[in-house]
Length: 390
Image (tube, rainbow, N blue to C red):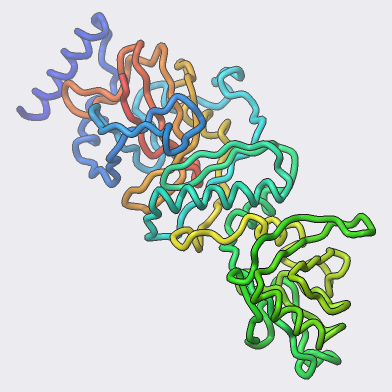
């Protein structure tokens, strides 16, 4: 069948399907472009959850049975509705957000196991609680997402706490090198030179918030027996000395030893820090340490800035402004570009009849009773795929 015969066949199908409506003028060009374009991203699964809680038990992954249209350069389906402006979107379909979402992506090339991802989610959840979020929800997939209230710690602080590996070391600073300003440790930076650590996580039994006799907030450590003995001996010989608590290779706290500390209980108050607040604040350091160390496959994770849900929904509705919004949520997927966060937006209802045909007999616009999932890259905000689920 040549191009003219194909165009005629498609025109007949459109007439039969839509009660004799004439084919749009740009349909032939769109079809030819669709045939010529190389599809650069293939999705192995179509996700169609109905809840925003996308945990391991609730994420539904089904093999793709319908047709897939990969939208290149953020372009939507051809037709008169594709260039609708935000003003044409009913306000009720894209309500203002009442929460914030953070997505934690594993390091490039990592393929965390379910067990390690569950553990990472628990560590990160404990960090958020320690940072001050009382209520939040989480979801899992190839990445871990958290939905938190609008109020509370800042976005930047939350991302730093979630992205930290959490490796810690108690490092004594020898007076011979650091007294009288010979060397000066700075918060948020590596030590001026390598120093041996007394202990790290292997010597720490627990970390939690506490309160001192003056009513100030403290960070309370309970040490394991071997570390408690070493720390007691060191502090007895170095009263008024300084210990650097190094977090992920950078100085996080610089407490001064006021008296010998035996018994394995160490209390650090924010007012006792040597130096001003640096890149990592006392609250952030405490939250990271209280949550603990990330499992190995999650060390080096990133927490990118993402577009808000209402912005992703508005992007989807610009493609189908007459459609009804059914649900939306965030998850992640692995493809040729690695692991990335995506917003999925389910729309349905009276979809426009002039939809781009992917190939004869297969359309990405289902019948009015069907659904369409618009996939938006959560970092760039671009539409990357439209999946038919009708």
